[in-house]
Image (cartoon, rainbow, N blue to C red; front, side):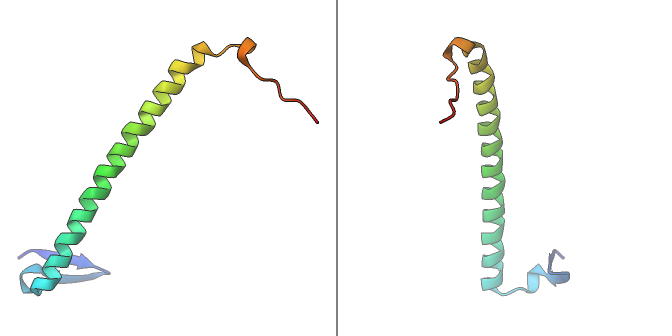
Length: 70
């Protein structure tokens, strides 16, 4: 017997209506999509850090724009 736990209550999945099981599948799909997007975001953030680190040696004091007070 598979159990679904939601809001501190347990439900027998086999006894859920077809509509409830469809909603459950939609939740599982969305959870998987969130996990995929979270992983993609982690990759993008890691790449951004690498690009910033690669850029740093090319920046020199001569290229720096000094802030001026007005």
